Length: 392
Image 1: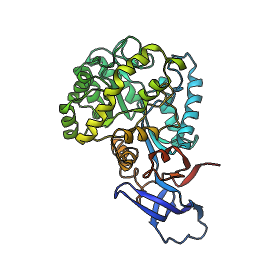
Image 2: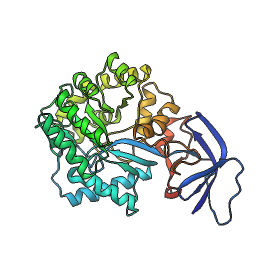
Image 3: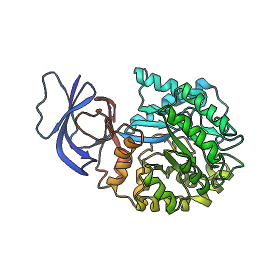
Image 4: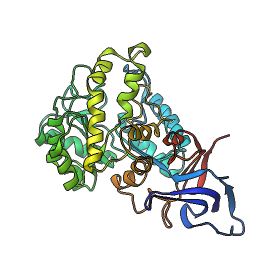
């Protein structure tokens, strides 16, 4: 199938420019031509963008597809109900311009089943990579749906289990967190040796690793153990920044997750222990993001979608928070496109509007480079050259 998208303002995130009144020709899901004067081939479908802004499809590198983005109070629901909810969440992501995600933990390997359904074309969903169940210490952060493991040998076995189930990534829990009662964000959990065992197993299988890590001791344990991506990262120092740059470790800050907890608070039903932990750490989290950005750490966009009131239609709000904390709109957009593709290892095929890459686009009513809030108003989403969402 051939589709030509005409009269769009195309954002080139590599050259950091905008090509006005431009067309993009897609064939068989791939970008074949980009230019201001492309004739429509016979039989091609023509989509007139009418001066709207086209960017690469957005990435969200930290999603919990099975969660409800409610109050954070633990629910007992069936696996079938969780899967149905996930399908709805994935559709919502698509409708907000998101064309690629990394799921950061799901129960009962539901993420793998939904990934297979997406690949088969059975559901409308972003392209994705998955991590199955997170690996945590007994009683540690994420234990309710994670794989509890103690000692290097058990962590190694836990990693092998997730890989066997089909995980693309292995997620390890280096510290406590906000949403688990009785643990603290700053406290280390899995040890360096335990982390290394799981990370080694992932790397042996060609998979990559990421860690929930908020406190500095746990972050350093994970970095020394060879992790590929630090998630959240409330507390870091110059040693962390230097190490991450030297070893190509990404940072996915998820600024949105604590933002929504602080915004809605206990009045909306969020448990008091979560709100108190956020109030103690949110300023430090934002300051660390600013310092990491200034230090030149590689940053990719992820929201932790599914945490309290952190809804699946608000991926772009992470970019808004990034700009509020010192990035330019272009830098924030690159975090959600080009840099995210680098983190997920798909730069050859995704992350920019480039001839030969996958025809995944997001179209916005306004210009996000003039006002980053424009990313919150998605007019159209295109996956593999096919319009899968269009605002009525």
